[in-house]
Length: 288
Ligand SMILES: NC(=O)c1ccc[n+]([C@@H]2O[C@H](COP(=O)([O-])OP(=O)(O)OC[C@H]3O[C@@H](n4cnc5c(N)ncnc54)[C@H](OP(=O)(O)O)[C@@H]3O)[C@@H](O)[C@H]2O)c1
Image 1 (tube, helix red, strand yellow):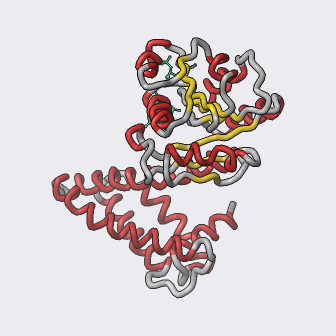
Image 2: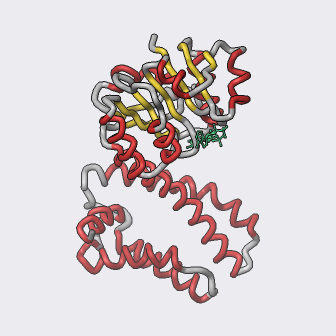
Image 3: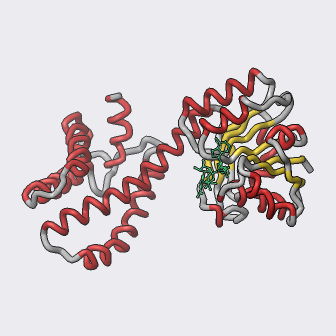
């Protein structure tokens, strides 16, 4: 079994280290503030006084600190050889920082992995948890099993660092879009005097319809088959127009629904009216 290191023992790093120890790996741990390493001695971790000691003793090094930026500084500051090692940054960050880390590691003849953890620390080790990674060739073959022990549904999605950041942006947009939809919906209902409890009670039925949206998306976007719409794009454009008019007439914020309506109406004007609403992916790609 590979010797592993976990650099960073905050909430997430601690969960990762505990899980790897439970899975039987030999784990070197380091944290900038040494107090956080104390409890790890009792559970069989190798406590390292410096990040260099941890890296020197390990072939696969997981970094889980504040963000990619701090991770780059940490890795750049290491005075030990990184040759032949795989550095796996599980900290979050943007594409440019990920690119800098990857190019620095390739200069040092080290392999890289970047991981996006789709879970809270309490979900680490669960068979349902997903950690998506990108990494240099061969890294998943060597260390995929380690990542799978942290999240049973984990997978490597390619080599490009930008792919992971884009996937994060794409999935986060879905969650935030839903949250902002509830927030804007609350504002228009408030303006009409709908009690927030009544509004909140109606949301579960709407969430069920969101599953239908997902089914439609998964059926049509990958295949680009946007014909035979049960509810066509123009039907959605008209319903959005009604919702927009209601927001405006009640003096509620209308910018969120307006952007949806503008996009849908533009596609209708370009001949997409009878297609599925999801054909907006195609229309907006062409417009980019
Ligand atoms: N918590 C979650 O639910 C969750 C979920 C997915 C992804 N993540 C990602 O996991 C990463 C860690 O999150 P967390 O929840 O563990 O955060 P946290 O509990 O706040 O811990 C932050 C960790 O980063 C270390 N750190 C901060 N700046 C540093 C620096 N300049 N050099 C070295 N170490 C530094 C801290 O060290 P000290 O102890 O010395 O301050 C601590 O170990 C973040 O990128 C976060 O976005 C977290």
